Every structure is written in C-alpha cells, then in structure tokens.
Image (cartoon, rainbow, N blue to C red; front, side, top):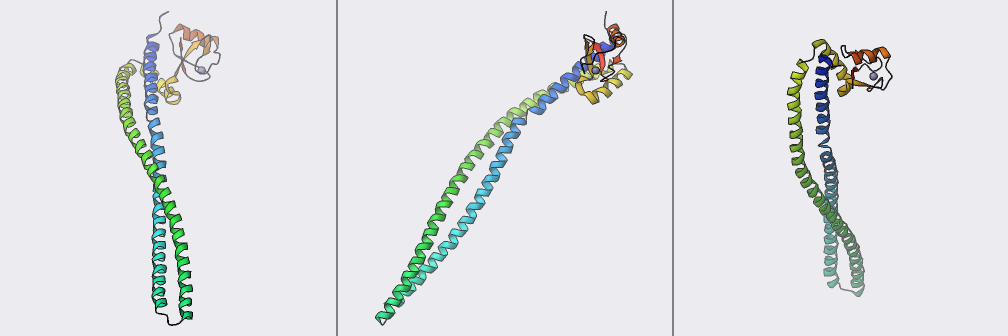
Length: 235
Ligand SMILES: [Zn+2]
C-alpha cells in the first residue's frame, strides 16, 4: 500500500531535521579538545604568575639580606680602623672580639644568602620550564584552532544548506500537521516521529493497541503513540 503523501512529506522533513540535529551536535563537539588545551594553558599561566611572584619576593628578601651584609661588613671595617688605633693591648683585644663577632654575623648572613640564591635559581628553573610548556600549548592551540575553525565552517555550511532544503520540505507538510510535529519536536528533538515495528512504538518501545497499528498500517491518517505522543509511521 502506498504511503500517504502527508506522511511522506513529514518523513522527508523529519529526515532533514535529524540530519541538522546530528550536524549541530557534531559542530558543538569540534571545539571540545581545543577547550581542554585552553584550560590547561590557563592553569599553566596561573602557575607561572605565582612562580614569578615567589621569585620577586625572594629577590626582594635577597636584596635586603645583601644590604644587611654590607652594613655588618662596614661595621667590621670601622672596628678594624679603631683596633689599629688602639693604645692598649686590652683595648686591642676587645676590638678583636667585636670584629670576630661581626665576622661571625656576616658569615651567617652569607649562608642565608647562599640558601636563598639556590632557592631563587630553582624557582627560575621552574618558571623557565613552565614558560616552555606554555609556549608549546599556545602553539598547539593556535594550530588546532585553525583546523577547528575550518571544520566548524564546513559543518555550518552543510547545516545552512539543509536549512534551505527544510523550508521547502516544511511547506510540503499540511499546516496543522506541521504545527503538531513542531510542537512534539520542540520536546523530543529529532525523534518526534517513531516507527512501528512488531506492533510496538520504536520511540518508547510500548506495545501499541491493535487499532492504532491498524490505522498506522493503513497510512491514511497520522496517529500519535498513546504513551509517548510521537507521531507514528510504518517502518
Ligand atoms: Zn511511543
């Protein structure tokens, strides 16, 4: 039995809508990998900023410590001049003690400085490592971005072509039926239609009453599935 023209028109429209939905999902998935790279690059950028802040603070502490060292050395120099002008052995040995204490202070500051400089070098090594990784990610992002843009444009071209075909296909469906279909499609997406196989609706897999199967088979009237409300057609 030939299928009713109204059902044929609806199936054509439904086919186009399904294709548009598939292509739209495909287009939306294209930039996903790119967004992953972007997220990773942002994390690395954040880590790099923190690392640079740490380096800046450490450098400031090193500068302060270097200034401490110069002060202690200046004091030791001053004491040496005073020691050389000492008039008694007692005075001389008192200066000697003071100078030794200053030198011990200076040596502690120098140890601190060495530790801090070692830390700074390590941090700078980390920062360079992050910069390299980030440059690599930025390059990858730019390259893949070009590819994704091209792919998105291609899929969007296909969607636009289908949208044109859809206008004609929709015009071929009787207005009340089109309205009904659009209403169901708004809820169920591309699965607004369901085929009937072995007496059951392929949208919700419920067994259909024999009367409904009979009407669908007749192909003269559009019937809705009583359980999921999809428009039924014979597969
Ligand atoms: Zn159903």
